[in-house]
Length: 190
Image (cartoon, rainbow, N blue to C red; front, side, top):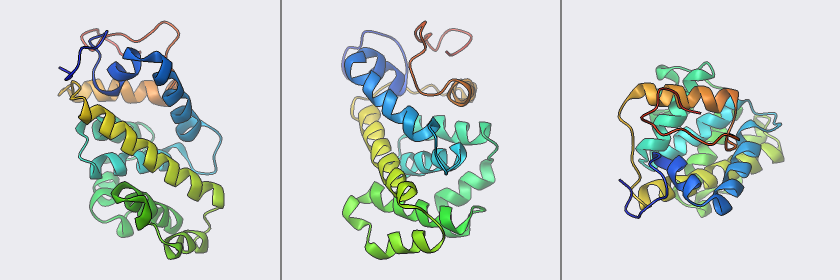
């Protein structure tokens, strides 16, 4: 249970966004643009950034949700393990390794990112927009992670929950479903 009274019984970030739609809708819209909008980075690459930041922030809900989404987009446990523990040897492009390095530094402290980190990314083909979006995705997921954990939201233990959530994130995206969300106790997650 969350540390504060919510107007719903939804887990993780979903419960918080539903509790305050006046703020939640804006956060969702930003997330939709960054993770599902038009980009030269693939959806899986953008989800890897979100997952790495969530993992490094030890946010179990967001790590579980976005790791499941990476898998739904074609990734696997081996890829995730390498990204989490040895990103420089992960089976991703050199450009992506450089962007993951930047994301990891943003997770720690924005000022950790140095000009040479940006130059490394550019050397491997990253555009200014890709670098911008990497920093913004990392910063956004720091917000999400601190929001979820700072208010002690409920985290389902069933991996099936995250698989269903991932399918929704892949097929529908991050915007609030018109019909609303269904509590975790229901058979499907929308």
